[in-house]
Length: 377
Image: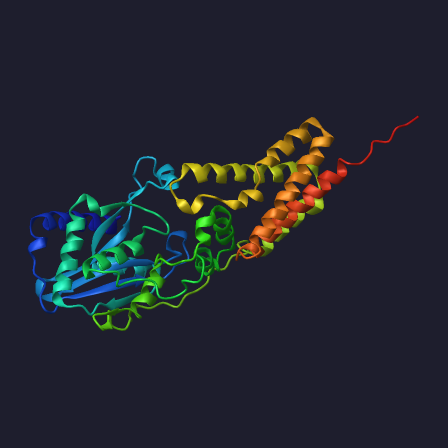
């Protein structure tokens, strides 16, 4: 709490000073501007790392980190706004020591790349950052790919340098989904969850810089006025990564659960499974229309998590065998379409246990209701 109070106080102080004199501060010839890249962590909020800008000028007693990744948990209807995609993020300034304390506490590595740009560009970048900080421009609507802490830094760098100097150098032939996939290697259920909830946008080629480590790699290959844009990356903090261990967060518990559902073959369990799958399908469909997050739109996973399963449940309840068979066959057909669509997708294998479970239960349901009822004469 004390750390939070200090940050709020520092932010308020910097806002006040910015509005009155920061624009008039002239950086000295010793001023340094660098891109700070924070390594990935094991928590959900830290899986992708973080990007910030640092301005250091010992002559002006200045060492400030500008951070585009701030948001307010106290925002009314926080969860609803985040889900809808209209949650306001904002830029905030930290003292460098406070910023580093946080990552030292989390034991996450921090890298620095000093920009090699003329003094006039350093001054312009400093002025642009302070202008944003002191105006309504400090607020922006977060978008997972298009507007985040990394893309906002790229935007202000290119604005200052006067052209599209910083752009993506590697992996432009890979989809966003493929690029994201390795970030979930230590958390099976997060990988499964994102595979399920993301729609077709993340299957586009990843031509934009949207991840901190992507920017870090691209900067090392970027030229400005016929020389490298930045110096070689240095480590400000270095920690050895340790993958979290969990007895349950793995594919084996997932397969065990689904195998239990298939082997037990109990009507109540099958109904529960179909209910969950249909409910998730309705949720994905709703989020695709409700949310401004384009990553959630056009979610073809609804072919697997099919809302039509609720119609099947209705006929199971009314014991209408003809329509039980019809709906089972229809859902099986959708599964085949889904598999065909998924053949070139990286998340096919992680979805395969669900596909096989649904297929098995639907086939069993159709067979059980196609048996002739014996007539005793």
